[in-house]
Image 1 (cartoon, rainbow, N blue to C red):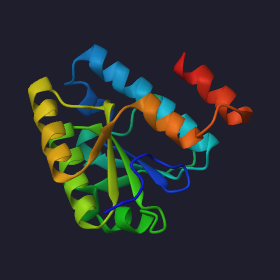
Image 2: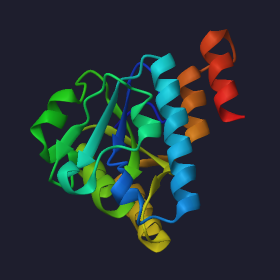
Image 3: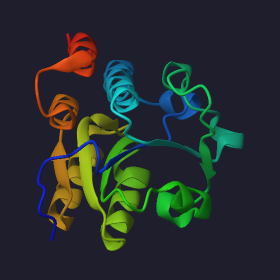
Image 4: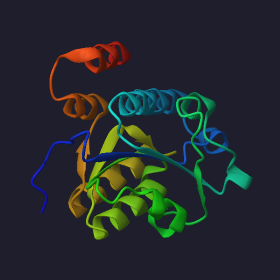
Length: 185
């Protein structure tokens, strides 16, 4: 069992799962934009606080690449291409998963497929898994709700964007605090 019930920047790794343009085109526009905005906040905060970030793409040949708004936040990043639904089934992903960081912060789509399967596999790999509820999406809200319930029952901690970034910060001081405060206004 994990001693920390809050995220810590020095223990965390942010995972952005399959936020691809073609996959996004079948999502409701408003929830999709809110999800992109929240992932953007998390990615920018991760950059400011030296939290490693990994981006995945499900079958990019058919589903396209990560939405430009997110990819532009990590211009040197090479997304991990995968065909398995769980990120953990892709060896390139597993190699990028930082072993000395026990907490994984999951965002992306779809909540009830790739996010769910990745979360369950990460729990089996002894990671502490945080699901950012306002930074995951499914085509169907019922499927998202079911996935959240399953992940919570399995032992994932369900949180939200603002809680995560303020837990990473820990205190209201410094340049990172000022920059992150501007992101969430």
